Image 1 (spheres, helix red, strand yellow):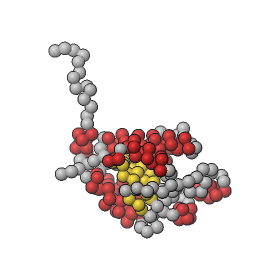
Image 2 (tube, rainbow, N blue to C red):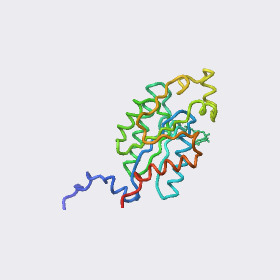
Image 3 (cartoon, rainbow, N blue to C red):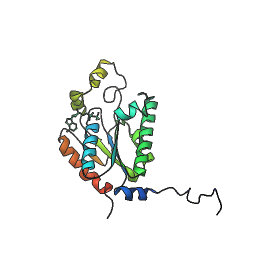
Image 4 (cartoon, protein in one colour):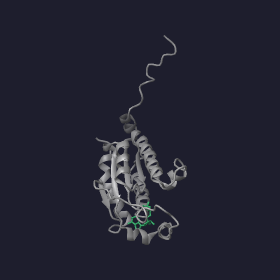
Length: 200
Ligand code: ADP
């Protein structure tokens, strides 16, 4: 037997093998919408629901990513772009190993979401527009950010001093003024479950 020859080394394990192991299909559920529209709330509620049904997920949200992987990025246009590029790459890694990634970032422009979609791949990208109106988001203001943005303490704040371009081709639109968290979660669950469930 020749030594130092590893014939199987170049054969990486393909995605379907990992999906079969997990008994589910990988997907990136991409929430977009204004600050306080409900992206994180719904992503975490959906994660719990999917977990209770036996599916493995990973939420990617601002607190995790901006304090960790992307802690060297700010809110200039270039940094917002790089923030989303890295998140999309991470989402792709998760979906490539059969995990359902739930990404909850404002991702304010068509161009930035187009980039995410192209990194992740059309078939793996499920876009949810959390369309809660600005007036309601501002009323909620759970972190006091809108108040600071109005005072000019925070600049380039989406919806106040930076634009938000609503998606034209979202897979699903959820206005949280129309539904409770439970209702919205159920609506999203119903829309995504066919893409996640392993085919029989
Ligand atoms: P985002 O991640 O979009 O910035 P968050 O989820 O952090 O938004 O905040 C949304 C706020 O709105 C939370 O305080 C949440 O409790 C509240 N909220 C009220 N009703 C709803 C609803 N139906 N769906 C989602 N969030 C809601």
